[in-house]
Length: 139
Length: 430
Image (cartoon, rainbow over the protein chains, first blue to last red):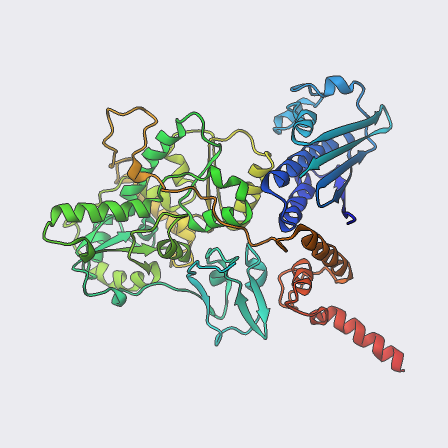
């Protein structure tokens, strides 16, 4: 059986809409009958990704392919890229501005959480060009 | 799945003209218009009463007991007024007068729910000291919210405060105390009658909470009591009956009152369904800052905004505030001096967890079939005008696409699409 595919544009100008895509996916996955923990892991991983794209990359796109046994989330942006991936994966490491942190974001848990809640996290990034994250959540 | 839940929101089909005002207001998309009349899909209904509030034709009703329904076998009738009742009357300065007026309605005793609210606040403060509880703790006081969580946010069931709502605690304590005071009475001769601000509390009394059965025998609406009490209040002299509640208990009637009683600065209180849903979505995605407690009320302003109240919620809230001058903060305390700081008495706890409800949103038990249906829904959705006009009888174009795939209606029920087809046929025949 093929995948059900969903495409979302993440608006980099609008902080208040960050998270809308993950809420929409959560609803869809519930309707499809995926177990609660799968729904939760997808929604957290996707939410962190959305926030990252809004904070660092002026938005981007999210493509979600739903298979009967796994969910593949691809987040792509044309932002600044990640110069040191190993450092960015460290819990608590953040390049967010003071202003972003005052809003309760930028705690340096985005990428670590994405890794923690997914089976695999693949990062393709080029400084000055953009970043593509591929996450797989198994069932 | 058969739904054995007894609802308190129902439809008067004679009065309904199928106008769609309630359609988009329903937080769980439980309403459809079929054959020109609203239909409530009971497995989705959480009895929040929002449709009752918005229906201009008074076709949506909240079902309550009437005082005349009380079985004569009950020799001892205890009224349980919700604190929201205190905010309904103009010029009421002494809560005791209101309690006296209630007695004059034919009750043998009045036990204020506000008194139990103070005890439940103390129990909650104790519960919050336990080290390994899922946080934030979400209040269990609003039955519509509890049912919403079980329906739409099953992951958060474990966060619901496993402590009885004040009205339940009040009913149990009032009955036990009456038995002690009047040994000549048998347990089945005593009944409790809750004076309720909303239909959700009625379904709570009928269905209980999770597996916990309610001990409340009757639920009468504040609207019914308002008329009786207004007349009686004029003739009531102050001084005969005194309120046993403090301001901390009375405050529960409006949004934030329960949370304030926890003496913590890490709480959130939200009222009205849309806000509550946004907050629950945020908790589920981990979007919220670290909070200890979340109080959510389905109605605007809290219980004072319930669909069975009379007064505007904000006016009622202002009246409740005026009692601050005459009431002490707390008047009811647990008798647990020797226990540890996080001890909660068993009789205040909910008997079983909240997570047994199967959410009805699933398209099919079989995931392959669910995915096939979803693909079909997505395809139909792209063909729809996506203006959510409601003329088809579904709240949104998305819900309509789901209904078509489930076989509940036909694609041609979309009048925008039908008009386009008609126009094309007209052009073709020219």
